[in-house]
Image (cartoon, rainbow, N blue to C red; front, side, top):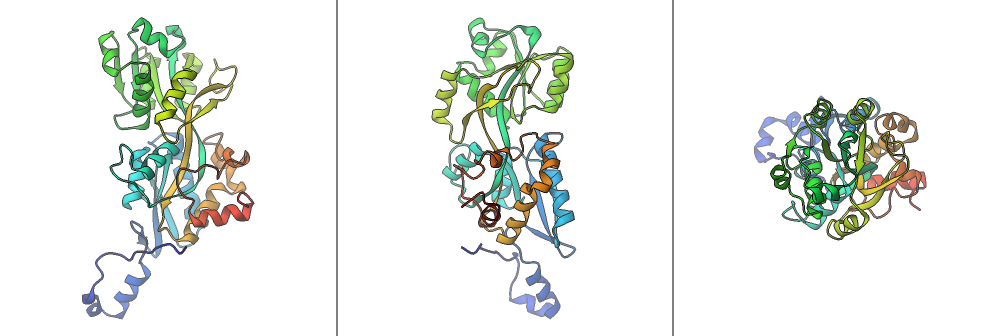
Length: 343
């Protein structure tokens, strides 16, 4: 099916009075919703992650590759986590987004926080695994999330700002144990909404005990913290995880690999999903093909894996195009058929 191309707003009969040259410029600059033409090039905005986060760095690398490798196209990167990133793409404020599978599933179905289905979202590919991680200082000698509830421990918890995926998952997991943020305050602890870098600093200085996050594994700032202040990874029990999976579309049971943090000597099961690259359905097929090729071509994987070590491993395991939470963009499908990833 041919992608639907929408012309720039503001074109009317009065344009004729501007002359043939102006008319031609309007036609040349016509792009799909949200794209801009700068210096004769299509300008793409990539969104996903916060400054300093691995996935934000992936967006920066992809933007650099687009600038260098695709004629007639340039790109930049901006911040936007999960729900926000997908909405930026839906509205045309960004053209390429990076969002977790469960966010995409909720968007397609119109589930919270989305008020109606986002049927215009298409997938370019799965990038890396995302894992629920509750990292607590080993010196606190806490062995499970259930122990926090049972003993009403005064944990000083950090998580990302309100509305972020980490904050959302923290509420979901703790809530499954019957713990609210308010409970932690009543027990003598507290919850701080800060960046991952600030969280690591607070834990290093003894002003925080733990962080609840949803992201790649490992997170560099916590790997560094783990050297001087050993961390213990707490995850939902099998029973709690399965309970959560019943109500959370797009989440799965996954494993944090042995050696991810110093105290992990064998794979640890937790909740997770894939960080997934999305675009609008009306992105031109050739553009989607070229971007997908850059993002997943073997010649570039070493660079991406330098930022996230399991980048594109889903394709290596034969699962890169299985059970996707939204339709694959035709341009991406073309590339995957060329690679033999789709028969």
